[in-house]
Length: 79
Image (cartoon, rainbow, N blue to C red; front, side, top):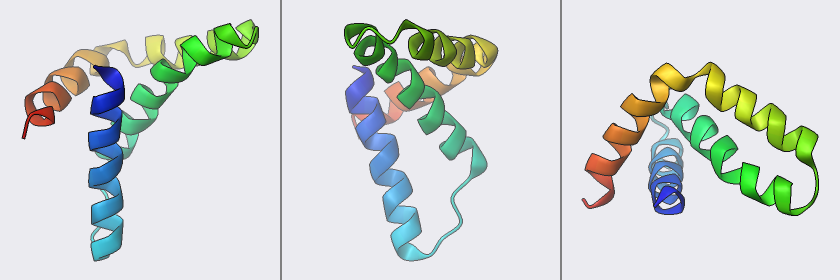
């Protein structure tokens, strides 16, 4: 599920920062995109449809990356 993937990406980002290692920009982008997608449901539940729409526009604007991000994340979630 997406929340598990988000957790894995966030954990990886935190580990890299903790080690003082550079965080790849693609990792940050993937986390931001996945986070935006997850937040949409919450925004709709709160009745903030404009915020949900903006988040969906962000996801849609990066749709070409979405498949690559999901594939990479799903392959690593189990490890």
